[in-house]
Image (cartoon, rainbow, N blue to C red):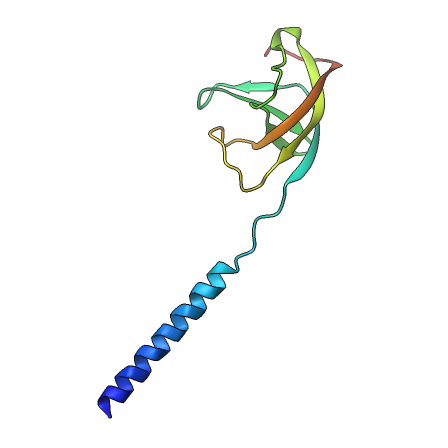
Amino acid sequence: MKSRTVIAGLAGVVLISSLAVGVAAKKTPPPGPFKVGFAGCPMFHDVEGGCWTIKMKGSTYEINGIKPQFDPKKRLGIAGTGTWYPAQGTVCMMAKPLTKIQWRYTRQRCGGG
């Protein structure tokens, strides 16, 4: 009788473990990607090797991946779009990183780069 109780207990543990694994496997993926529009003056932050960011509507976006690179000596604003993946990390850690960036200069005058 004692061995039946032990076997039943082990079977219960296996069942609960398999249910927990099944629930963990059904985790929903993060939302996104999101297409983001931006316009403004790029800002350089001398952290983690340097980060270029731009602020738009209360959010700060990292634009280190911008190609071709804009010329900060022109002191002009930029505008464009990029793709933000919420699960994507960055060494900058102070902004949401954008990829697939398309941009152009604007007439907005900016301070020093």
